[in-house]
Amino acid sequence: MQDLQSLETEITAKLAVATSVGDVENIRIAELGKKGRVSLLMRELGKMTPEEKNEFGPKLNQLKNTLNAAVINRKNTLEEETLNIKLQSEGVDISLSAGSGDNGSIHPITQVLDEVTEIFTEMGFSVAEGPEIEEDFYNFTALNIPEEHPARQMHDTFYFPEDDEGNRKVLRTHTSPMQIRTMLEGEPPYRIIAPGRTYRNDSDATHTPMFHQVEALVIDKNIHMGHLKWCIEEFCKKFYERDDIKIRFRPSYFPFTEPSAEVDIGCSFKDGEILIGEGDDWLEIMGCGMVNERVLENVNLDPKEYQGFAFGLGLDRAAMLKWGIPDLREFFTSDLRWLKHYGFQALDIPSLSTRNSSIKRGK
Image 1 (tube, rainbow, N blue to C red):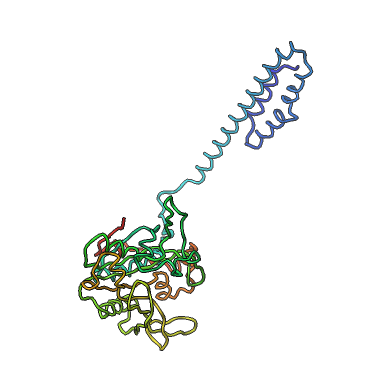
Image 2: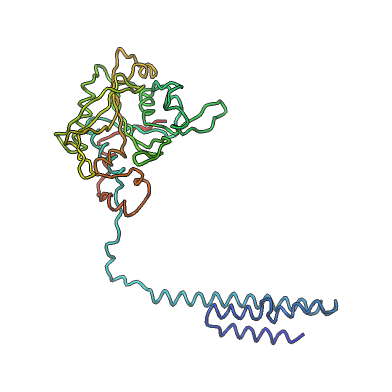
C-alpha cells in the first residue's frame, strides 16, 4: 500500500491548478472513478488480512472523503469565479434609456364586457354576479326547464357527481340563475344584468365549451313588450355605434319567457366580411321575451301584480361581429400574435364595468 499522504498531496495539488470545471471533473474520474488510483486501492483491501484491513481501511476511506470534498470545493470556487466574470462583463449601464418594451393589451372579451356593462349601467341597470358551479334548482327548475328538456341532457350539460343526497350540481349553462337568485334575495323592482362565464358541451368555429354571456332582467309593475324593444334597440345602437341599425323581432320559444322572440340585426356580406347595420340580410344576435308567469311564481312573485322581461346575448359572438373575428376558438388560444392584433390599448382609467354601477354578488 503506497504512501497515502503523498497521494493526497499529489491529487490536491492537481485540483488546485485546475482552471475549469471540466478539468476538475477529469481529475475526479482519473483518481476517484471506477478505474482511478484510489478506487484500485480500495479493491486491494479484499486481498488483505483482517489486521491489514483494520489498519488501512479507515485511512483509505478518509482519503476518499477528503478528495471528494476537495473536488466539490474546487468546482464551487471555479463556478463562482466564472459567474463573477460573467456578471462583470454583462453589467447594465443605468445611464442608458430603458426603452419602450412590449405593452400589454386588453383582451377583446374584456373590452366587450366593459362596453356592454357601461351601456347598461347608464340605462340604470346594476351588475349581478354568482357562482359558476350551480344547483339544479337555480339553473333549470326555477326557470321552468322541466326534467325531460334536452338542455338537461349530459351531451349538453357538464354535471358533477352526485352528492350524499343524490343531487348533482352543474357548471351553469347560462347566467340566468342570477336572475332567480336576485329575485329570491330581495324585493322588486329589479333591473340587473348578469355577465359571466358559462359552460356547454359544444365546440366548433362558433361554439366553445366555455363562453361568456350577459343576461338582463327587468321586473316591475306595468312592464310590457314595448319596454323590452326599446331597451334592446338602444343597446344595439350604442354597441354597434349606428343610429340607423335595422332590428327585427321574430317569434320564438324559451321555457322561461312567454311570449319569446329572437332578435335580428340588418347586415350584408361582402368579400367574406359581415357589415353590420346595412344590406338586406339578417343576423341573429340574441333571444328575449316577457318573463314566464311560472318563473315569477317560482320566486314568490304574483304575476298579476308584477311583469317583466329578460334577454341574453353571447359576449364572444358580439365581439366577433363587432370586430370581424372569424373563429371563436381563437379567443382562448393565448396566441400573442392574435392578442396583439385584436387587443385594445389599456387606459389609465377605472374599468368601465366598475363605473356607475353597483355589484350584486349571489351567495
